[in-house]
Amino acid sequence: MRKFANDILWGLVVGDALGVPVEFLSREQLRQSPVTDMMGYGTHNQPAGTWSDDSSLAFCLADSLSNGYNLDDIAYKMVAWINTNLWTPYGKVFDIGIRTSHSLSRLSFLIDRQEIITPIPKHEARRNDNGNGSLMRILPLVLSVHKKPELMRYQIIDEVSSLTHPHPISIIGCFLYVEYAIALIDGADKYTAYQQMQKIAEQVLNNEPELEHYKRILKGNVFDLPESEISASGYVVHCLEAALWCLINSNTYAETVLKAVNLGLDTDTTACVAGGLAGLLYGHEQIPQKWINQIARKQDIDQLANQLQQYYEQRIGYKNKRPTYKVGRLCYFNG
Image 1 (cartoon, helix red, strand yellow):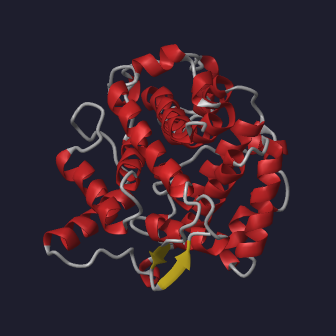
Image 2 (cartoon, rainbow, N blue to C red):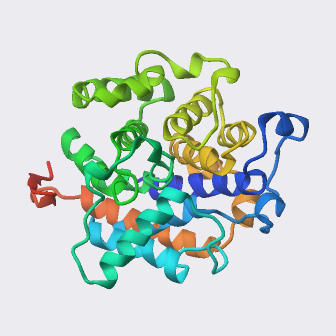
């Protein structure tokens, strides 16, 4: 079986690390001095191959999923990242988004008081809290929801996103991203995967008013837009648009992530989100080995990918069993 966990984790972390040194630089600045290779220092003064909070939180999710889907454990591991430096490249957190920081403080409070871990209530979701902080970490979840019913996939994605980002705009972005990834795992090319994502969104989210924010993706082909109309800000809608635009307008993994980085602004996250999909599309074997060799904690990432892959193979390997999975108050069969 193809090692989808390696495709995902190496795809996202290499893109992330390429973008870290130039985060916040403008597109105009990068046009004058484009990123063409792995670099060090720059914005965060970190050595080459350093990954950001994007990969750290994706690794926390992957680490948790290696033992099955458990929302409490996902929360514990994210809190351990911020409090005890779990899954940091060099034992120190050097970057974190505002919404994520506030949300992890809330989770830390619940854990300290030994209270029930719950996603942020929907009535507390604010429209201006739709950064890309849950999108950047959500991709490993595809190996937990693959082959599950569409509605169940959406509900699980809702739970995991809402640990930090509970607004429907963020949840929809994560859902579209994961659905595109599922299509790639199932063997679709990048154009067919896009069409399948649009179709699933129409089926599952047709009554969701916030879907309007994704009309450039869902009502047309965002990849046909000129670069001048693609924003690389930290807004979740912009991030997903940019990632899909880079992926579909490129022909290799390297071209995809370098295109994403050179859009400027939120360079690490755009390249992380695009890189995860590019890893699935082209396979981790197509990621330049010299880039992989520079990534911090390479052996640990390899081990994590192997653990996640083993979980995935065991999960989809059921033949005559139909174990149940609980999501919120609902219970589904693993069909």
